[in-house]
Length: 109
Image (cartoon, rainbow, N blue to C red; front, side):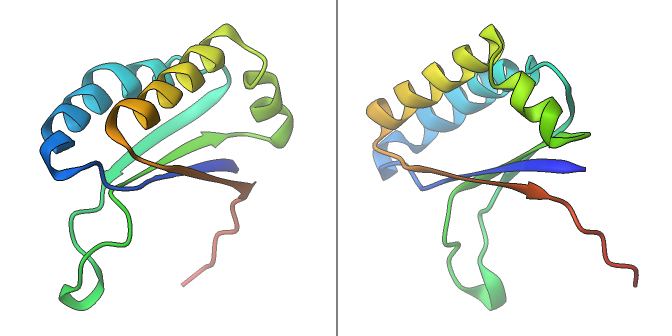
């Protein structure tokens, strides 16, 4: 499995409700239209480790069968729409978006 991990910083406190509404009602549905994607997982990271505060606000995992599937998706109109919306969120809510991409390595327990 090949994954893209998107990490969002927290919006300004006065924008948190509007950010969450936009993320839930606009951005996630746009992301869900990404071609070749097998699974989309969105996490609101409200809690940090051992009672601390979280280092980020939201994390999303976009799962693909292969690097080639992700690369093909990057050239789609749906991907372009999702990227444009992310750029608008960065401008509107003062958030940052950090992305990492790589092969999943499952560890047997």
